[in-house]
Image (cartoon, rainbow, N blue to C red; front, side, top):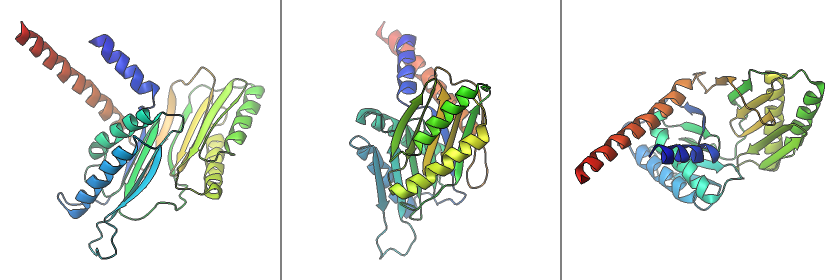
Amino acid sequence: FIFFFLLFLYRCLAVGYVFVYSGCSDEKYQPNATYEANLNSLLSGVAVSSSRTLYNAFAVGNDTSDVTGSACYGLFQCRSDLRARDCYACIAAVVAQVGLLCPYTVGAAVQLDGCFLRYEKTDFIGKLDTGLRYQKCSQSASNDADFSRKRDEVLADLLAAEGFKVSAAAAVEGYSQCLGDLSAQDCSSCLAEAVAEVKSFCGSAAAGDVFLSQCYARYWEAGYYGPSTSSSLNSSGQDYTGRTVAIIIGVVAGTAVLVVLLAICKKALH
């Protein structure tokens, strides 16, 4: 059993289920409110759609005759190198966790390594937002001038992304992505800010990530992505490290329950 669990865990990490950040709105909705029904409908649509496409946007309850303010807008985006089944599995993991991360909030954003989900009560889709959401740099640094040059080459190449782009120069690798609701011009503007931020924040670090609201840029020295310093922010400046721990604890607890159930079943069979 342990072998298969470790194999499953490795599979999860390999296809991008690693938690990056989450952010929640301050405003909440009341249980059983119309907004909750619309949100559940949106999340169901997201889950189904992610099995067929890597990006989609949704609006539920936005009928002009509805004056209750219960409309819900959302989108999801998977990394473009993922297969459809891996996109579906990644989004399913987000949908399963978002209610725990952001209970009863009218807005939430969750970023895993391989996919992203966001929903709000106001229509944000297609509107450029370059607010900083998360940044991280490796603790190790490179004083090699050639590394700095190659890092800058990779970051410059990532600026040319139209959606998703992978780049490499000697020992430096990286990739960037914009959300599917951005125009080519807005994608370029977003990436320009992300690249400038990662260079400024991470300096000579061997690896760095910057996630803005609608795009991100990442680079690393080939073969290494070590311990890091990080900053995860939402509109209220809160740190979400604790929620990363909560997800890990949830996985461990779930595994423990499964082990107990298997033991009981085995005993019953004998």
